[in-house]
Image (cartoon, rainbow, N blue to C red; front, top):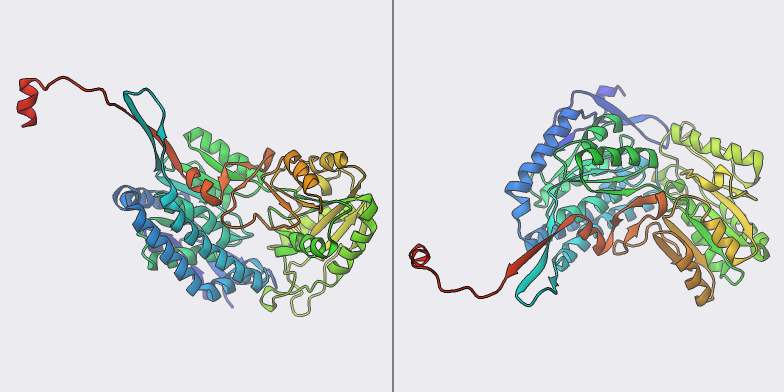
Length: 496
């Protein structure tokens, strides 16, 4: 098929599809061939989108009553559910993830709009204690125009995660999805418009990060920036925000540990440890990519995990395997470089290569890999790989487990596996991470659970009620309630 014959997806600005001057080919990770084209937006398109968002904020959405915003959010949620099959198919084709996981993404996206539609009326100010003759209270007000730059691993879910609370709080949005996976954010914009969201409230400008993304991050018309992605790009986004002096929410990845104590339940731990590093082929900021296991149970747990890894089915996402391809050849090669380095310095327990997937030889697949005996200063242990690679390290004492868990400058999530509640509580308090899961593990948890990074995993809070506060500014109002004397004659005439 010629490139010109591929389906084309254009930017959505002010409620309209905008003709594109240039295009980006979209590759199917399952076989590596293009199947669609998305618009390559320029700084001019970003200007247009920000202007549309500003107009809608000042003339429509910013003045829409909370109950009406809530009704629209619920309608968007219902429309997303009605479109779940089409959204899941597009997500799988675009990202390579198994279709079952993509269906979950569609449901979670709907839940974000549903949750914030229900929660926004709980967004209230406070009455403040002050002098008896003063009445002081706070208001929570939207920022105005919010810029959102999201990654390619969960484009539908993260688009909803970031724009739903912003819209519910009364902001308008300009969303820049990653060039590797743009389709479902564009479909989300169409669905939201059909559900009653005003034109210009949600604008989507696909394109390259160094072009559209950089223009959005530096735009003087943006009042708040949210970014999810790599630390290096996050630093550039934060630097751009510093120049325009706007607040930022940053989620910059993780290197999350599981800490397995001798009294853990293997039947509970093994499947969730496996899922935490193989969901979407390990391309997950909260992936449980480090396994810290007590020496007394190390060999038994490693054997159980090896058996589970070798039983995983690998294939194209549309066949709903356990493990699909990585997003691109670039990402596959990056993961394989880490594996090769780990193989030189550590023990490869299983995996470590490129599987043969019949009929999909051009796909971007990597075998799920376990590396054992990984030192705490090794790049496989300290750096985010973003692939199905589990680094295993033994420990002897609780203090050593904490030291190993803290041996990276990431702090996104952690899992603790023990039947001893006191031990779990003690460890949870000592770990500098945003989320701790005890005898369970979930990538960033549920919609209602606040999601924040510690150390260099980011700043600000997403998800839960905290995200609504993240997308509002606090204003304090103070009334002097002391009685005044009678109005003067001139004042009386004026009042009359």
